[in-house]
Length: 53
Image (cartoon, rainbow, N blue to C red; front, top):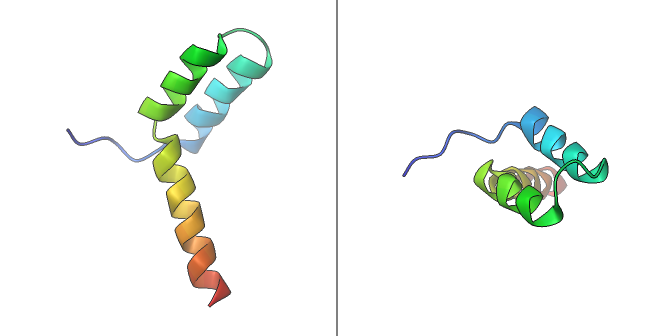
């Protein structure tokens, strides 16, 4: 199953729902996972690795 690229704006919005108490932590984690948080973090790590070289 192909996932769309992570949307940082959507991920931040989902995080904000947790911070405001609007959405329970378990649901937020599930939303972040399906919205591509891992992929976004991986791309940031990869870009940091290449800029440090």
